[in-house]
Amino acid sequence: MKKGLFSRALFFTMMLVFVLALAACSEKGAETPAPGAKTEEGKTDEKPANEEGVYSIEDFNNVKTNEGTAIEGGSITFGLVSDTAFEGTLNFNFYSGAPDAAVLNWFDEGLLTWDKNYVYTNDGAATYETSEDGKTFTLTIRDNVNWHDGKPVTAEDLQFAYEVIGSKGYDGPRYDGNFTSVVGMEEFHAGKAKTISGIKVLSDKKISITYKEATPSLLTGGVWTYPLAKHIFGDMDVAKMSSSKEVREKPIGFGPFKVETITPGESVTYVKNEDYWRGAPKLDKVTLKVINPTTVVQELKSGGVDLVDSFPTEQYKDNANLSNVEFLGAIDRAYTYIGFKLGSWDAENGKVKTNPDAKMADKNLRKAMWMAVDNDQVGKRFYNGLRWNATTLIPPSHPEFHDSSNPGVKYDPEAAKKLLDEAGYKMNGEFRTKPDGSPLEINFASMTGSDIAEPLARYYVQSWAAIGLKVNLEMVEFNSFYDRVGNNGKDDPNLDVYQAAWTVAIDVDPAGLYGRDALYNFSRFSSEENDKLLARGISAEAFDVEKRKEIYNEWQQYMVEEVPVFPTLYRAEIVPVNKRVMNYAIGDGTGIYLNELAVNADKPAVAQ
Image (cartoon, rainbow, N blue to C red):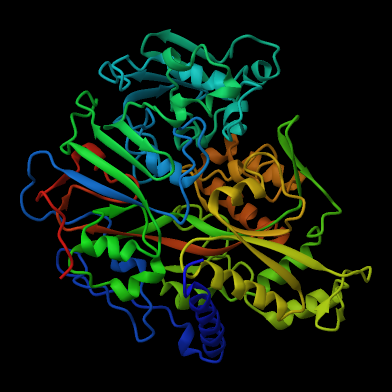
């Protein structure tokens, strides 16, 4: 433990409790901040906060302003902000954590890209067309798309990815409804067929994939487009692929940069891929290094990093005027949430097994825990408005389908106490008992991270104590945390509640996180009604956008009522970028790609 860390955490905890209590007594404290004033060009001159020091995501642009003239070549350093090492599963077909994705994005990519509305385009490494009935996708890979070792990316490589993910020996998280919906996949998975009948290799560069049903999701992320190099993995045992040196030590892709060296969990050096299909990158070299959230500001000020994957929004207020960076911002495709363990993963059958006798099985208990926390004030006081109260499980990054009229569950600790009383959770001294009179202790896990990770978790514990619930907190580092909640298919039986976050897919379909066959359904919640609503969301009737909105509004409300998890905060993605960096953007559908990234000077600008 670093010297002074405990006292700092205790200070934040006491301060948060104080400001939340203060805000609860003030109508003014709940005002929504006004966006910053815009220039004629539409750019914010500065990032103004209101009198409370609360900002708005509307104050930011998502495209970097270019300054000066790009030099030839050059290199940058990219900061992966994390308090733990990246796991190092460096292949899209096997990885599970966001840190590994940040490493992957520099050297690999999918065959298709999408626009700002999350619809596939024909601007990627492959083009596509659909059959008249919408069930068959035919992808044609461009002739100049090659793996980093010079071998062409082929249709067989994409077919091979489907075969690996559909194999019994596969140990990754991808095998879910997106794959079982392919014609012949379930028979292949069960060992009843040697091939997947719905996948046809039409030529070296052309492949067709046929689905059981046409769904609106197929056009917005429902087609898996990440090939797996068959010439490298073809003779390998599927069960050993994810731990192989070809994934961990010497990964290849077909993206703009090649992996030169890896220091496991700590750093990666990339060099330009002269053969990149969009054109050779402007930069010669990129160095990725893991930096702790507590040192990210110092690294930015000194020029130790040129840009980062994310910036701790709670640190923005004190660093908004850094002279050597430009802060970019966008609504993140993500939210944080509190999850309740309601069962376990049935690995043999590939589905969740909900336990009706789980400690957290009573939805009244779960709802009361939601009612006890004031996430509106958490967003303002901890994150200065750059995270804000979340209401449903479809975030505002998908404005067509996020139900902004749904209030979720409102903060009301007195109503929470009453609900628990009526449900039979009676007070016995300081804390409540179960309805049968036995002691109730709830084990809660949250991830380590920035300075406020533990104080925030302790605020939730204190909020639950205020309604009479005894909750024991355990702080766990990133990789161990997701193993504990079930990322490896093994659920910790001693874990009852957890705080985590999701980056959601470009497709709005939430089945990959909350479906019965989704490994990522860490709460292990299932019901016939949930099955029905998720199926309707990708059914023929859902091709009517208004009908699909109606279905997902119904699903959002259903999850508010059942509370297998509850969302806590929606998030702004805030990224500081050194002023020498050119041609960079965050968010989806910008049309700006990493091979265009450039610099206007040999060395980073340093804060004055």
